[in-house]
Image 1: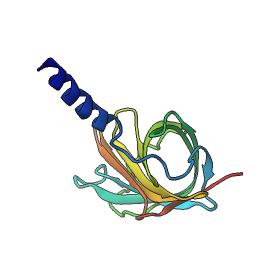
Image 2: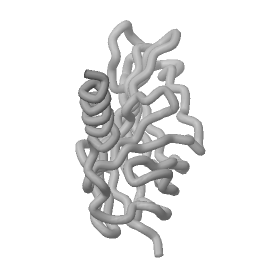
Image 3: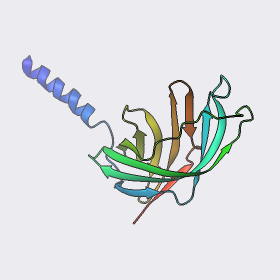
Length: 163
């Protein structure tokens, strides 16, 4: 009886430990956008609704370090330009709190997909990658006093591995 319980326990925990697919390619390295990417900014500061208030262009760099076959640590840095208020209801301010750069994130890898998360394991982006190209969608929504959503178009964030 005890032997059966041990076998079942090993089978269950063994399956959970290897639930992802190993990476199809190495992802470790420095990945950069070749040109600025449009980021959209929504807040509920100007009205009581979460509305598009501004856009900005970002040049993004992700330094990825492998921690295991399935996880990575990511240091994301960016520079922004062309901040533009696009909502006429925002007369004095948009309520936008700029993201911190650098951001220290982590990621889970399954085959050719990278899921980027913050320290609370909230998903911020999902990317697919090949040997030297990565593309994905960024979507960071959080609320404190006001809510803020910073995001890209679907697969709008494209990065290239630097050699």
